[in-house]
Length: 532
Image (cartoon, rainbow, N blue to C red; front, top):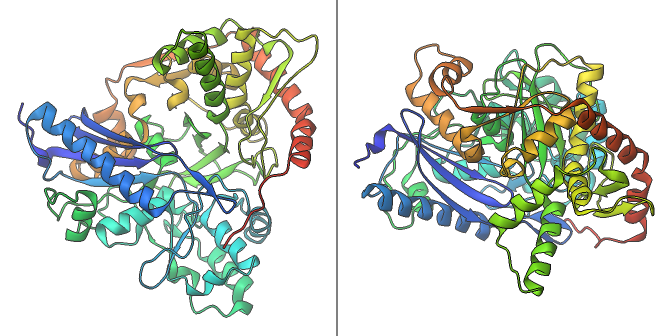
């Protein structure tokens, strides 16, 4: 089968545990994919990925895609119609005037910016989460970190990769809204907030102004540079990839997940659940400030209410690994493709409220419930029913509970309406299970698309398709509705009333028992955080 490489779009996403690339055609079908596994590491008290891991992982992922294209289609991947990169949201990656990182990349997982987050939220009258880039910058200033005076460019991971490939310091509107909040009347960074920030730090006399070190914000559908010769060699050191390919505005994984699930129109929403979990609901009216809710934008600048849980499947994965070790020890080893579905399905047999078991999956801090650190915990009353089904259900519930807390606030206090809620991410890989339990958490039907397994990189590739092939004045919402998802295969599940009540009862006990988690943090010391 011959492939018209010009009629393709390539999306690549730097997720928390995997870098993945997806190549689609003009009919939005996945032609080939590539991937590379990686993990964050704690260095000097900071969750990070090294520059070697970032660039090496990107090259390994692309090389895997290139091999698969050659194997499946018998052609060399020498060009594509468009390229776009996405990455885990926000974080902090400042560069000097020569483009060299001034610190290790500080990921979304770090929770050392509580002071900055609180001050900026008060100053801006707008919720500024700890993981946002502006919070990391202000915390570094409050800490008196030496590198701050040398900042020439302020980047996220997606912005950094985009710049290395194109030479352009530019980000999509969704990613930009997690650097500094956007003004929806201008579709640019909010000038009032930038001026307020400048006033806060005026006494420092830094040689830079905030507006001058930010990447420019670019609307979906617009081009954000082209692949340079240096960028082509960086992505494909073999020299096969040709420069000159249009670059899509880079985005964060929250926005690409919205695109991949057709959840960019008002009153639609999606849930992504993997290493972290978040729900994104496109609002149709202004919302008040809530500590548990972040306000972002779609790639076209529409307001999005987001509840982000830093912890989702890490603790669950650790328990599955323990069961795998046990199976091996008794001479009955099980591979992951067998063990995960078996244990997930078992959870459906558990009691609606998990039978008195309780789990906190906090590998790191959790902003929604007010924790800057985390200690994974499993606790139970002596009279609780400790069965495998209840045990697994507890850990699957724990992966969703923090997100449910914020979602309940949106539904109860802001009357946010959701007409469609789609799910994607590794949590939903076992058919029906995660989807069923999420429905119990939200008390609404939950749908999964056939393409949901491709996730963010597919969403990034779709943004490239929109840039390349949309009709004049066609909105992203209309393009996705009519040209991408009109005939999509969707599975929808709804939990019953007893399961919804069971999850609510579990959540009430979870919130009531949070002092247990706080006591664990106080009595089990963590390595001291060192920021330089």
